[in-house]
Length: 417
Ligand code: HAM
Image 1: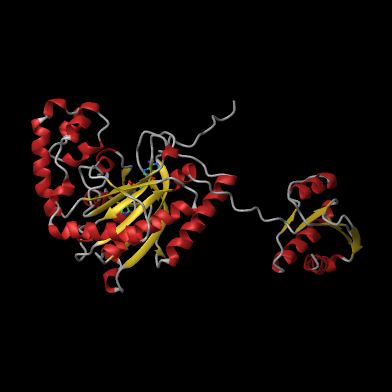
Image 2 (image 1 turned 30 degrees about the vertical axis):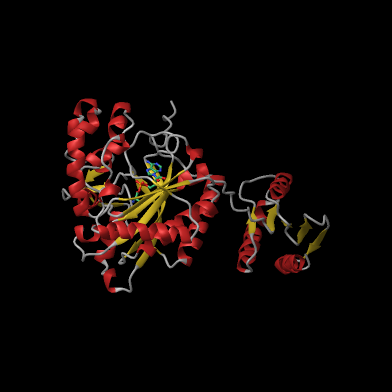
């Protein structure tokens, strides 16, 4: 009996061939856009102390309550596969004393994240995000620059017609006062609310704005709006961000019902959605998280950033796989005794900087020529005991030459192209 076949776990996938090539193109775009704006690459570990997310993302969020892959190490420490990248980047900022560098410190990542979600198209349990975080300045121009970079990335990868929604959550104090108003409104309408929203009136009343439940939605239409309760500083900050987006000609809609699924946001929040995606319409989102670094044990440090889902950008975008680079020399041989010589030619070709391949699959000479043709090889060297036949696959000619002159001949041939 043969062993049972194994499959990748639910909500995960293998990245193969053309998909890998499209991802490479996307990474190149993200790198070019973000590094030109002064963002440096950062990679943090795939797992962190569970406390980082409990404190950073927030105990009342769906992510922390039900979506984390958490395990215990041999010393009894609770660890979690990272569900997002902002809390880890802030942890690293504090751990490496980055507040001593020139501010703002700008960091970007392209990493995989893990959430125990119901898997469906565009929603996975392991997914990738491109993220950009800028720490150490509360200048509204940093919010606007950050948003502009996300918009540019989406344009570059061909996500057309994405909608930018924008709001401000104000400061922690404003939000505290506003939460009381909202709780009172929810309590007054408790009978119409969904079970989930009702159970979280105290814990996380703002999430009621995200509910799909019809009666809850109607209650929320009449709810007080946080945007109308901002203090003067926060209202001014929000006005500045909007004004700067206008300067950059970036279209947005102010959406006072926009709440994001993470607790660390303060002031600006934004989300980009694309109709091309169906139910999982969020391509990217982010905002300001001015209290997060301090909450993680660092000095008071403002910050703003976003993350965009790689798979969602690929679904909504039009990236082409990077062009396949043609093989310049294929080294073929018929007699097993010629393998050593062929391998020597391959090594020499690579030292000379040629894109070279050799026969590694035990094919007949005819099979090898067919394979070289399929690879688009420009030259094929057929190694024999005493000499080598060099065939020009494009020009059609061939010549029998001394084996130690093959590389020279190929280089000369390529130069005369
Ligand atoms: P988020 O909105 O939770 O924000 O995720 C950002 C993006 O990641 C989403 O817009 C979506 O494209 C993608 N994404 C999220 N969950 C999944 C999933 N299960 N499957 C596929 N794609 C997914 C954050 O993670 C924040 N850390 C963003 C941020 C950075 N805020 C400030 N700085």
